[in-house]
Amino acid sequence: MHILPVAGPYNFDLVLSRLALDPLQQIDFQERSVKVPLVIGQKQMVTTVVAIGTIEKPAFQIEGYTDEFEESVIRELTRIFQWESSLIEVHEHFQHTQLHELFNSHFGTPLVLDFHPYNCLVKCVIHQQLNLKFAHILTERFVKTYGFEKDGAWFYPEPERVASLTVANLRELQFSTRKAEYIIDISKEIALGRLNIESLHDKTEEEIMKELIVYRGIGQWTIQNVLLFGLGRKNLFPIADIGIQNALKKLLGLKAKPTKEQMEAMIPAWEPYLSYASLYLWRSIE
Image (cartoon, rainbow, N blue to C red):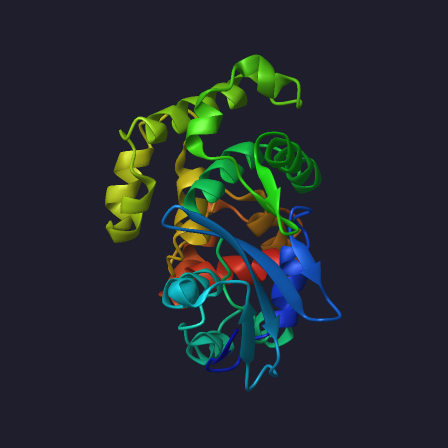
C-alpha cells in the first residue's frame, strides 16, 4: 500500500462520476475508489485507488501490487489520473473567458486518461457516429466477450486476440461490418508490429496525426480523442464533436449549434488548455 499526496485542487468525486458513465468501470462511491486494471511489462494486475483527501488537499491510497512494481504502478497511475498537472493554473486561465462559469461549477476536474492507449483507440473507433449510451453498451459487449476479468476489473483484449477475430464475430455483438473491419485491421497492424502504439507517447501531435490517418476507420475526430484521452495532450479541441457543439449552444444560449467559424473564433482565448475546455464542455451536458 502507498499513500500519495498530490497538489490541489483535484476533485476525485467528479472523476468517479465521469468514469461511472462507462459500465466497465468498477467504482465504489461510498469508499471513493476505483479499480484500475494495469499491464506493467507482461504483468497484469488490478490496483485500487482510494481518495482519502479533500479537493484542496487531495491524497490517494493505492493498493493491489507487490513492492517490486511500486515505482512502475505509481508512475502509470500518475499518468492516467494526471496527478502532476496543475489544475489551479488551468482554473485561473479560464476565469476571464466565456467558460468561467463551467470551471467554477466543475472546479478541480482533471483530465483522466483511458487506462491504456490501445483501449482508447479501440473505444474511439467503436464510439464513432453512435449515441453515447449504445457506444458504451457495444464497448462493454466487446470487452466482456473477448477481454477478461481479474479481481473485479475488466481488461480489454490484447491486439493479438482482436486480430484473430472475424467480422462475423463482431457482427454478432451488433458491430457494423465496416466498424468490425476497422478494429480487426488496426489490431492486426499493432500485433504485427507495423503500428507501435507505445511509441506514440514520444511523438508530436503532427507526427501522430500523419501516422494514424492512413488507417481505415481512423479520422481526425478519432485521432484528436486519442491524443486527448489516450495520451493526455493538453491543447486539443475537436470542433466537429457534436457534444461540444451542443454544450456551446446550451452555454451561450444559441438558437442553433455554433458554426465552425464561431468556434474557431473562441479558441485563442482558451489556449494552451483547449483539452480542458473540451472536457468541461462535455461535463456540462453529461
